[in-house]
Image (cartoon, rainbow over all chains, first blue to last red; front, side):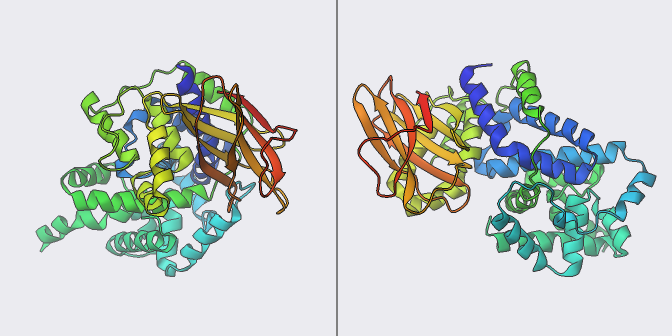
Length: 168
Length: 252
């Protein structure tokens, strides 16, 4: 590994590892598995850095997309339905329980305020889908709402979040 | 009716797709749709910026030892070459800078340095354009260093707490500096950055008081070979000579 590459990757690690681990653990929940997935994600970032395209979004968005996708893949591949049923009870509004958070409380407060600005159905759809790792079909089942409605709410919710956070 | 619903369906899936809340067959179908729909791709990109914020606020200190294991594994893992042809790479780099300038940055900048610069300095097409409107000259210089052919990235810990990251280019005689997690100083004092070498001790400037835990990016020009980079705590107005102790002394 070239020295410049190694130090650059070191910087990437310092910048993203806590966020990658945080979101993976939020979705996967089991600490040992979360660590495994985090390691896989960070290696994927190293291996596929050339796929990052600044024209198509920020580096943070690219990294977090990889992390979230791998976390969801893990949950869907290993978790049996019974186990998932058990998780339903615990994945309610999980954005509150941040242990040892390292991101500035200002940023957390901002995201929380934007989540609070959503309708209840929008907010539940987002938390179950993004933090809970459920598909829109499963979210519809959990909330007892038609899938068509959930799809629309999810899109409306993200558009509202995006505008509220001013990240577009 | 049924047919029409099916036709309209892909676009409403944008939210579910951006949150990975979608089954594998749906994902494949939606990605086929994305490939043909420029507008949808743009919407997904913007929604991903929002979901990224949902991810970032969950940040948690990773278990000890993870970094060593990741870096060790990376050392034995080959990086994939760009999927795009070499001819496309300058375009990718220009996207990091700004339209029209930097004719050819060359393919020599490692992909991970480009990613590192983007992740650490937060530069992307959008933010760079935003910065341009604020402080054009300095942003242009920063972009030029980050995408220089010989751009090299270094990180180092700061005595007393924090980490600095620099990207330097000897061909451009400049470096870009940013710091994270520096110990807060009383209002009467600030961090001052120095270049130290055979040309003497040159003050680069005071670090702007960080609104959050990040400071910078600051550009230091007039870099000479053999220079060191130093960081000291000084009176808020700055001084002409660095006073000890140096919290960072980095060979460039």
